[in-house]
Image 1 (cartoon, helix red, strand yellow):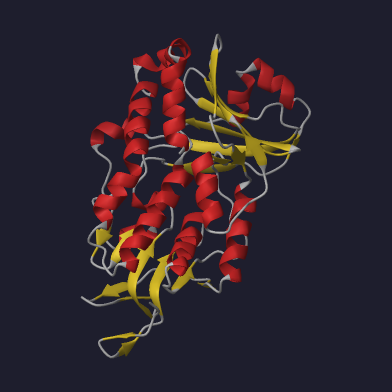
Image 2 (spheres, rainbow, N blue to C red):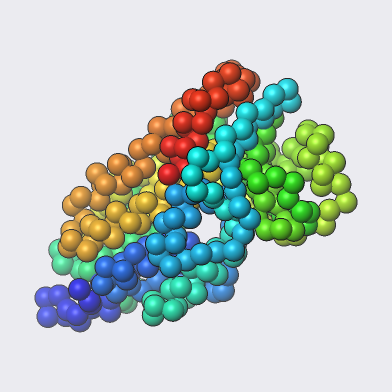
Length: 353
């Protein structure tokens, strides 16, 4: 199927995609693989960076490979949880993951999209009108419009799909900071350190660089978080900063639905629990796959159910861990994982698929 006309009026593409980050481009590639044309609308030019953990789990790496994308990075062979007294490690049972700079990933996806002929226009989606047969955004007409424009999605807002957070969750709003340091990785693991009021993530992203991220309620201070871990502080002593400090949040975003007429949401724009388990990209890739299947079949009717199915494990496991991390039981997370390594490993394997 290719873009032609509906109701006697010419279409510019089968699908318009608001957002040219990794999930927007991956969605465009999924659609291309099914014979649908897409135009990506992204206001920023060039490579887009973002504060994220940058760990691609085995399932995410496999999903990218299926799209013809193989970004350079550092092998990740497992996850380690630790606190001041103990640690527990699970190494993946089959394929390795990969630590990849966000900029490297975005460049690889941009190159692949250009290679297959996907068009990108540098503009923001800010006007949407739709009928029973088509949707128009920024003067372009298509059968469908996809919002893939992140946590603070403009498409979600314009399509009236936002859902305000409940009063009871406002005090638990969490944010993230990330920075890179020019130091050779000392491990092939993602290391998650539980501090009294924050989580610290270490991800090797190439042979000379590690990424350090902190997740917590405000106020956040990456330098202070690093100072609370003697071993990490010593490893980073004297290391040059390899990137600017970047922030993200509030991490929890709620939507009242994933579709409205001929508009659909994917990735962080479709609703987000927390970055605690580090699987945001894998979930977004799974969503882009099932959304492309629905559009190839000619309908959005099944997407809501497919979205719920593709995100269920992540939402349940992350919500449970987040509830513990923001409760008096926070200090029991690492001890429980260390006491039940098989359970910890099963959870890691489930999220890594």
